[in-house]
Length: 342
Image (tube, rainbow, N blue to C red; front, top):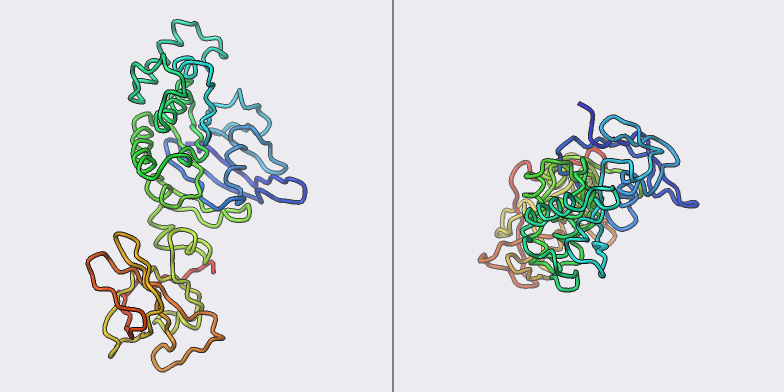
């Protein structure tokens, strides 16, 4: 079966800037796929290349096996939900949802019926007569989704659609989006810079940086087995150990990742690794403790070492050592991940 979305050596330049730099990618049909990365990493440009708003300078874009590299947006089986929702303020909700059907020449009665069905699917029955200004942020987001889905696209593109929502509503909408994708069964391609969104919703995640994909995998793979120091640091937080310290922590002399939640604070006597608490930061459900190693085992570290401090995540309810305390560190076998691409 052909991939729903396929990039083959795709590049897109803006002047001297290579916004997308030789990307190869396959998104399976029916998959919830996230493109994750910082601003300027190339993820939104890739989304626009799928939609047809941009065309590649090199490479091919395929949808369900068909080459659409030169196909205009209106002839592609995709629809897009933007961060600002782009609702028409002078139109009612029902007319906003039915707008694409009107442009496509669908009869008035049919487009109203389909628009009402789409609103009902978004838990907005009876909202059709309102204006967008009369809706909450979450309701406007649902209207934008209804408008995108009413045309029955085979791929739905979402460009940071939750970015304008407050934290509590954003978390609720993450659950709703994932449930909606399972219900309608179409391919979702979701662009975000929020690693929590990507990890909680996506079947697979592509991590972007500098116009390139640094890693593709399931959320568990990307978080637990980062391919590089960039991925380890961007997806969650991690102690990225240079080769010397990786060896002292019991691994090979190669760059490795050790997640703060994998470390435990223990008495310093007899601990393989000991250090001094330099500061704490309360995070609500946990406290982040910064530990200056000073030495690892019998090997002293000085101010010129490229790594001295590790972060430990202490779960809520457990004692937190004060600043200046001498502590030991422990971790389970297998917590240290050697990064093959580092």
